[in-house]
Image (cartoon, rainbow, N blue to C red; front, side, top):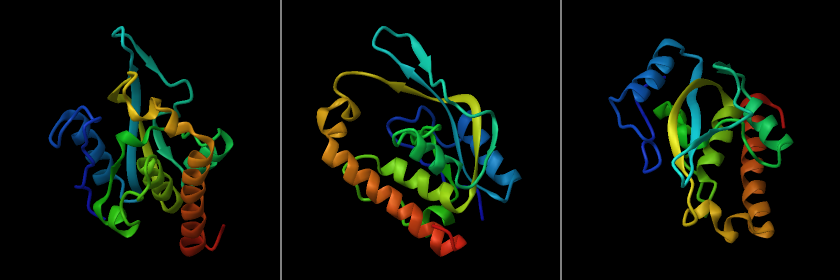
Length: 170
């Protein structure tokens, strides 16, 4: 696998060639068994202060299946943030890219990637996640029980299908 595809979107604070992208791609280049990376996120609150996530894993490799297990045990909340995902291009293509969901499509890709390969977590922040009242994840529709349950079920079903296909588990 070649380490050269980076997801860069409006939430990620760096572009290809930045120190964070170089760090993430460097991890992939040096570790052929690692398929993806994520990094620490700091929530940027309206008053300008930042808050980290208290369940961040330690810096280093994340075993295949660990993100899925945590996600299932913590009400569909992963211990790493999918917006910081840096993924190998061939893995991204093999998984079919981001899921066609109205929300949580990045979570779906992260869970799928972790179902088939190990990842890596960087404890150095790679994202300031701006928290504000207009963001999609603060809308009632994002947490509406029927909608959320349906999204989580599709993500979980994909993970189980990948486990069966790649590892004979499920």
